[in-house]
Image (cartoon, rainbow, N blue to C red; front, side):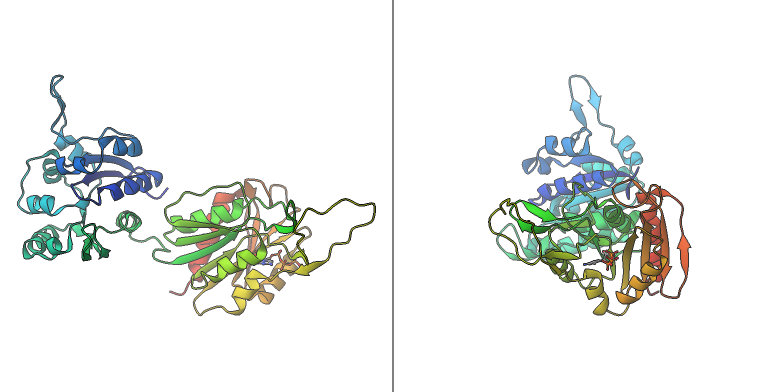
Length: 401
Ligand code: CTP
């Protein structure tokens, strides 16, 4: 996980954007971070400690003492020294001013003044407050300390006014945190598309033509690409799998035609990996009511489906990297090379159903890669997550420098 073991102190201050911090905590925790939340007194007007303690799985503190009678003292120095990163999101104009003036009249501020780790802030306030010379001067002071300012976005504000001041979206702040910890992720800022799973081609309201693909390889690839920093669109046919990764967006489709349409709407992606087992044919007619049994033979007429990989290969943009799969029941080297040419791809991943532990359903795979320059390389039997990592390493090498 991208933020495994990273200790993040999240300060939440009194702003209407405080609710967005809840999404942020969830994403950070999902990515493996250890998150402790500090609420300013003002934040408690907008959000409850319970929301944040539930999401962060740690108690949330906002005062120097959490139980006066029992004498429980929340030690801001311990908390400050614990953190690898202090993030204040949203940062209100008031807390900003106090930070700039080195005031420490609450636990959040005292902790801020005690940290030795990097500090990132995401200001959120009304447009005029944001544009006020005092706010600009305060932000300049924070900048001069080396803090990172995550600029607010332009848009409609809670006041009804339009302008700059709205806190950045949680996913953008999340990305900034990941970038902070991994400044050199190889696919940072790139867009990738992955197809996964089978397609179902309907015969009537209750029947379809499909295949045994489970989507595991495609899902593992989507995760590896996202772990390498890419923003991934995962277009999947009907599968049982779920995906929760802040950089992966899932589109669920049923048929090959739907899959093609979803893929074409992300045609700008620099990386495309076609891991879906797309049905080559669909029924020529789809019955509106359930087909009835009869004593006669039944002949189904099938028509070819579009080849999604070949379609994208035919219209490829300079600099794109396109990767396909070949699943063969016999040897397959020739077929793999033929698919590379015919579909205009850069790399074909062959998995042979002859190999024990390879192909559909299982958690392992054994692959051979084929490149356009006639090179090929065989890999050992590995978990699909490790196979995905091997493929992503090769994709990185294929991208233009
Ligand atoms: N593919 C696709 N759209 C299709 C069929 C295949 O995008 N309609 C993609 C698959 O995702 C895979 C590659 O093409 O990356 C090869 O799929 P495969 O089924 O092995 O190849 P076909 O072209 O269908 O060839 P054949 O069935 O004759 O082996």
